[in-house]
Image (cartoon, rainbow, N blue to C red):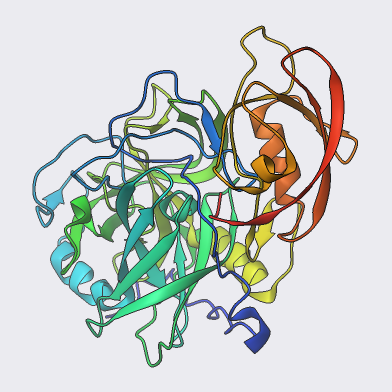
Length: 398
């Protein structure tokens, strides 16, 4: 397709070194703090199975939840839509983009639920970019490449919760079609754009939603409706495209079919602030920079690399309003239970660092590694302050 004169292709993300191929293998189990759309248990605690705050405890559901937007449409996937300002060739742009996308199907055995989202192929050997909330809490992943129709297993190389970015590596993939990256720094309000993704988790040929860019540098609050925790996502593109559940992790492309953003959206359990009525996307330059850091194996304050440490507890805010992370439940035969922690204990510090909230516990745990031993400071139900050592396991991404 002809270039629009502003979008210049960016350098592709390099393949990870051979040692990184298995770095993200997540062999443990746990939950999702972002978007499950199953029936939510009233008063549910934050599942911190891995050492991260896993958002809601969701009751088993016969219908797989979808990772997507604030839209609550439940119809069949594949219903394409055009909003004011849509490119005239929206369908052609979607067709050009489709072979570079993947359907991501997630199982969370801790919550007995499944979900579906979208990903974008960064390298021909199977490095895939998606939203963190799509894979958060996964205990198994199945990824279908649209370009060749094949289904692959996948591991999580790393993720950045603060920017809602995650990177996967497909198992034994080769010669995949990769996305063409545009120059997201040249995007302007009024530009036509098309979102392409796995609408409603239907799989198969991706759906598309045409529209235009309505704002730049947007900040939104992404709130977990069960735990009450929130994250601030910043620097986002806003679009009037009708982004429905399942588009999360998909492509927002310009009029030359170059990717300018990664669609990020909310669902029933993980919602944007009350004023957030449009669709949003992470600029591809931002997502690519984080992806490159993850593939290179460079951990930071916001980027987690490789397997996730697993503590094996459900935590919530103490009912008396005090600081700490109150254990509502423990995973049977998990690290916490084996060490002697039980329901009703309140974790107040890890390795001497104060824990003031469930979110704080997640952040502290993500700085550790599976197999390491952590000293847990806690107050038991009688009010006695105690410590014990826990050897962390491996669990789902947070």
